[in-house]
Image: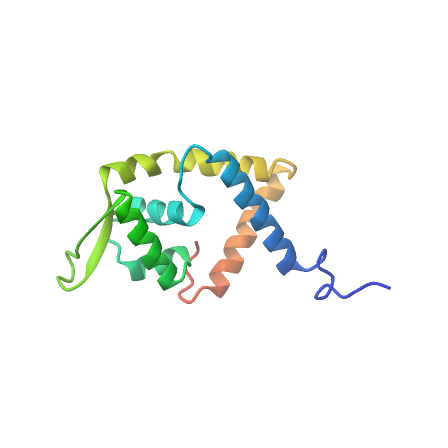
Length: 151
């Protein structure tokens, strides 16, 4: 007797997405063995490298990582010397973060690292399907983001 998709883990989209996430995280771990940045830390650094003067609230919106986790990641990246905290040029009461020279160097290889991981993750998927898959994921994220921004 066949189980409905919601109770059969092998057919549940939620379960499949989680398993693919685990595969991606394992590939990232293997490919990034020579650096000590987690995926979330790299996501924060990458976001900061693409836009100056971001607050922690901005980082939450851009990355989708919850506020308390972002705060912890930012603190750890500051202690590692990869980020610097400074007063916001827009609001003197607020703080924003920017990459230090070490942070800029650390994030400089991120695009190559992401490309290697994605290439390995999607190696068994035809290019046209991989493109459609990425587009579908962006559509889902956009539909379920508070402000419609994609990750």
